[in-house]
Image (cartoon, rainbow, N blue to C red; front, side):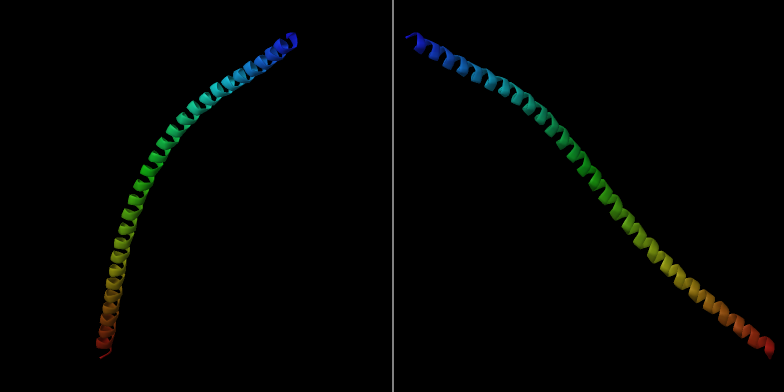
Amino acid sequence: KGEVETEFADAKKACDDVKTALSDQMKENDGHITTLKTDIKALEKSIADDREALVQAEDTLKDDQLYLKDLTSRCEDRAKDWDQRSQLRADELEALTGALDI
């Protein structure tokens, strides 16, 4: 009978040790869960901020591309005008030179 009680006490102690270890582990896991939830919220905010920045950057890029396209078109038009005026002036000089030779 004493041996059975000793065996029971050892089993109870082992069970209590396991329960204590599991309880400690659960508390630790709860702490980790809380930390991870906080990290998740911070990451969600960071993602939202980064998405907003991306949208703004894309809008700015589109505006810049449109401006560049417009500027390029205006420059090309002015270059054509310059070429036409230069050719006209060259023709006028040639005509004046021809007139002076006469």
